[in-house]
Image (tube, rainbow, N blue to C red; front, side):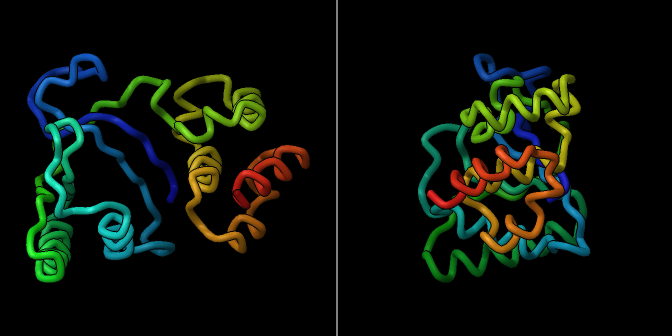
Length: 177
């Protein structure tokens, strides 16, 4: 992943917030390098990361895929149909990507924000909230803390993430949990 940002999409309410979502859903925007991971691989992560047969309790938490092109739409529909054949029913909706509204800063990089020592290091590197949110290194570290990626990947890139040796060690220990 190059960058991840959480926010709100899919509705018509202008400038939604967590407390005033309107008709939007909470979602994640992923910028990725297709030479490193394909859209099909991202869809596999999506389907394996939740139960798409479970009804959403509310629009806020609905299972939804937003597509940017007809090719993405076709692939999303194909994978949804495959999941439906396995599970019997899939509640995931597939819709064109419309306007994406960033969630509040306190929602961005949730796992990292709860690891105060690493957060302090990145705040020193990225004092501007937008730079922090848009940083590839920050997205990668947040993912590792959340248990994503492999230990080998983390070991291979830990020195390039901008952390001090102590920060790298802390990240390794958090990942190993």
